[in-house]
Length: 474
Image (cartoon, rainbow, N blue to C red; front, side, top):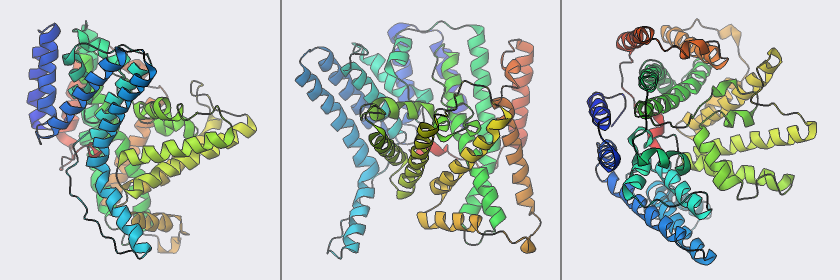
């Protein structure tokens, strides 16, 4: 079920109003059932895999918690890793690996052609797999105790606001909030609804309009001009940010109306002053997951420069693969890994590191522009239909511009350029904190006026095509 669908406009009020009068186990069971309805709306069979993952980690965690024997604890942890990652590999990567083997066999001129399986990818499997794995690993590490309530565990894995596309929550933060109904104030409800409407505006008006232009241009890279490709690349950078952060906004807002606080997933990433800071601002729940459960266990930065750089490449390679079973996502991850490596070497040798909590200065502008355009290359790899298309686009954009062949922007370019300009301006203004006072307004009248304005804008400017959220495919 899509947040931007008519069905959800009926589903959400029914779920939230009923949840407001329930307590304890009845509340948990209601939210679990409704979360499964939400998840299985398009394909009920998806729910079986979700339930299986929940059941596996609920029992494995209890086994780990019940013994102090290191060998047994590790054995049970492996049950979780093999079960969850095995399911992820089978549903998401089996076809990719088979196709890769066939390609290698063709290069080596071996008589091998394995059939490529056609397996339907369950929506959001990468998100809830990482979430449930973090629970089992945290129990294994002794960070949390295993829950005895299956309803709490089921709700932790399937909680509908963030089930399909995050944020990827940690058990030590979310589980205690799901055990009982959380106290909520009128501020929680008002702030939650405002956040939901803000997310819908970002998605339905801005992200979906930008998607129309980027889809058209990226579908015909050879026939598009340099200016069209460049505008489409900038447009996609903001399309994917607005699309993905809108989902997080709506998820956070829905949870907030129930008194539940989810983690922020974005902090104005295109104002990052270096690539390391970008990853502390972009998809924060994934980047911290990769840091805590992969980078640090590999040794982090504790084992010398060469090992650190190797760990960075491994993590970003797997981070790219997490996004999809395609070499373009792998190359996207490796490109970011290269950037992080170069920044690590530069900052180590110069001793200069930009602290994220320091205010922005005019002198930071070059770092912001350099980082943004480095990330921009990665978005071409991410969005292009294939690696060959990505190379065509990058080669065309980077070729010398022939101003003798200059043509005035078409009507479409002008329209989408204006949309893009509004997005850039809003990102800078809000990211620099110039509108912070507005976010602290608690007057019901002013908030009501804001809601009315947002609804009117959505009604008047909604894109003609209702697009799925981009990260539904992961």
